[in-house]
Amino acid sequence: MRNPVDRLTAGLPHPLRVAIDWIVTIVGAIAIVLAIKQWVVNPYRIPSSSMEPTLHCARPEDECLARFSDRVLANRFLYHFREPERGDVVVFETPRLAVERCGAGGTFVKRVIALPGETWRMANGVVFINGRRLREPYIVGGRRGNDDAPPQKVAADHYVVLGDNRIHSCDSRAWGAVPESHLIGKVFAVYWPPDRIGFR
Image (cartoon, rainbow, N blue to C red; front, side, top):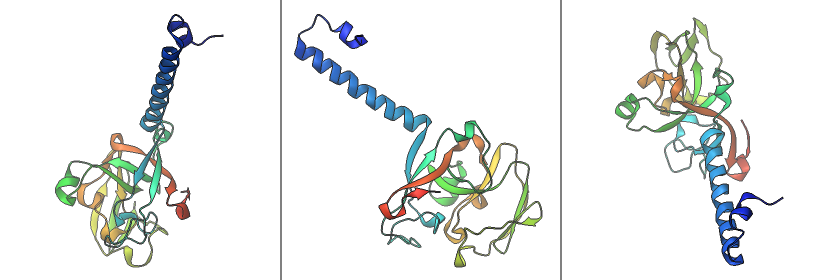
């Protein structure tokens, strides 16, 4: 059975038919890659130390532990099937206040800490959710800091996100909770550098 391109180019000279077939193949492959990036999986680079040591950034930037920044993959369709969960490391578009208060905006990577409807606070760097201390094994050494934040109820369809390296993270403490509509996806794997490849 002949494909549509063969049928449409049947009367053309052979070299022209081959060229058209190659063009259609290349355009189709590019379209598939772009569709995967848009709706399924997208790569991101970790540019800062806000998620150290969970996700590495490259020296000589302040607090970075690695020679190369981690490159991660984010699942873009997962949150169409389930809500974000506490502990998820997420990629998101920052709220407008991030530019004003952090000097940077665009796409950030942080960890989901408090969920819609919960009340969260911070005392001497320790997070409490609905009055109970949150266990955070991903914070290592002196990276917790000693910040305080008053009790705040998380609005519907919003999430509090914080970096694992609290002393070098500009996050929900500075600009508030992130609307669910700003979430791009959940980080599920590191694909570069080779010694860091694995699922998260």
